[in-house]
Image (tube, rainbow, N blue to C red; front, side, top):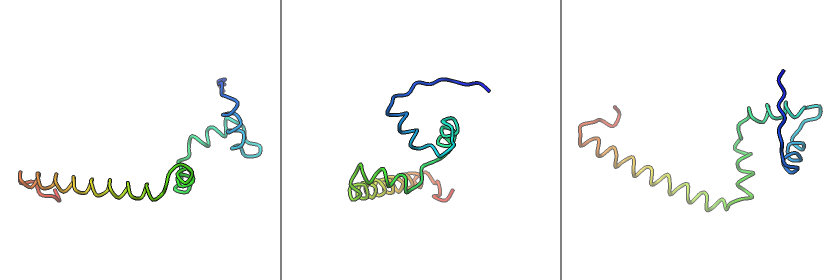
Length: 87
Protein backbone atom coordinates (compact mmCIF):
# COMPACT_ATOMS: atom_id res chain seq x y z
CA UNK A 1 0.00 0.00 0.00
CA UNK A 2 1.30 3.43 -0.95
CA UNK A 3 1.37 6.04 1.80
CA UNK A 4 1.23 9.81 1.27
CA UNK A 5 2.18 12.43 3.81
CA UNK A 6 0.08 15.59 3.93
CA UNK A 7 0.50 18.82 5.86
CA UNK A 8 -2.48 20.34 7.63
CA UNK A 9 -2.85 23.20 10.05
CA UNK A 10 -3.24 22.49 13.74
CA UNK A 11 -6.85 23.69 13.45
CA UNK A 12 -7.59 21.22 10.64
CA UNK A 13 -5.92 18.38 12.54
CA UNK A 14 -8.00 19.13 15.64
CA UNK A 15 -11.19 19.28 13.59
CA UNK A 16 -10.47 15.89 11.99
CA UNK A 17 -9.40 14.38 15.30
CA UNK A 18 -12.80 15.34 16.79
CA UNK A 19 -14.55 13.60 13.88
CA UNK A 20 -12.68 10.32 14.31
CA UNK A 21 -14.56 7.38 15.75
CA UNK A 22 -12.81 5.32 18.43
CA UNK A 23 -10.25 3.04 16.78
CA UNK A 24 -10.65 4.75 13.40
CA UNK A 25 -7.48 5.80 11.57
CA UNK A 26 -7.18 9.17 9.88
CA UNK A 27 -7.12 7.34 6.53
CA UNK A 28 -10.39 5.58 7.38
CA UNK A 29 -11.89 8.87 8.52
CA UNK A 30 -10.88 10.64 5.31
CA UNK A 31 -12.35 7.85 3.17
CA UNK A 32 -15.57 7.89 5.21
CA UNK A 33 -15.94 11.67 5.02
CA UNK A 34 -15.16 11.84 1.31
CA UNK A 35 -17.82 9.22 0.53
CA UNK A 36 -20.65 10.92 2.39
CA UNK A 37 -23.03 13.58 1.22
CA UNK A 38 -24.52 16.16 3.57
CA UNK A 39 -28.00 15.48 4.85
CA UNK A 40 -30.73 18.09 5.13
CA UNK A 41 -30.11 18.27 8.87
CA UNK A 42 -26.38 18.86 8.25
CA UNK A 43 -27.19 21.73 5.91
CA UNK A 44 -29.81 23.20 8.24
CA UNK A 45 -27.33 23.07 11.09
CA UNK A 46 -24.85 25.09 9.06
CA UNK A 47 -27.45 27.52 7.78
CA UNK A 48 -28.93 28.08 11.22
CA UNK A 49 -25.69 29.70 12.35
CA UNK A 50 -24.96 31.58 9.16
CA UNK A 51 -28.15 33.18 7.80
CA UNK A 52 -31.68 34.17 8.63
CA UNK A 53 -34.12 31.43 7.59
CA UNK A 54 -36.79 33.97 6.71
CA UNK A 55 -34.39 35.67 4.32
CA UNK A 56 -33.53 32.28 2.77
CA UNK A 57 -37.22 31.39 2.43
CA UNK A 58 -37.98 34.74 0.78
CA UNK A 59 -35.06 34.49 -1.64
CA UNK A 60 -35.94 30.89 -2.52
CA UNK A 61 -39.50 31.91 -3.31
CA UNK A 62 -38.28 34.83 -5.45
CA UNK A 63 -35.92 32.60 -7.43
CA UNK A 64 -38.62 29.96 -7.88
CA UNK A 65 -41.10 32.55 -9.18
CA UNK A 66 -38.51 34.09 -11.50
CA UNK A 67 -37.58 30.66 -12.88
CA UNK A 68 -41.24 29.79 -13.41
CA UNK A 69 -41.85 33.04 -15.28
CA UNK A 70 -38.75 32.47 -17.39
CA UNK A 71 -39.87 28.95 -18.27
CA UNK A 72 -43.34 30.18 -19.26
CA UNK A 73 -41.76 32.82 -21.51
CA UNK A 74 -39.57 30.16 -23.14
CA UNK A 75 -42.56 27.87 -23.68
CA UNK A 76 -44.49 30.75 -25.27
CA UNK A 77 -41.61 31.41 -27.68
CA UNK A 78 -41.40 27.72 -28.55
CA UNK A 79 -45.15 27.61 -29.23
CA UNK A 80 -44.65 30.45 -31.71
CA UNK A 81 -42.45 28.07 -33.68
CA UNK A 82 -44.96 25.24 -33.41
CA UNK A 83 -43.13 23.30 -30.73
CA UNK A 84 -45.55 21.60 -28.33
CA UNK A 85 -44.79 22.07 -24.63
CA UNK A 86 -44.94 18.32 -23.92
CA UNK A 87 -42.56 17.46 -26.80
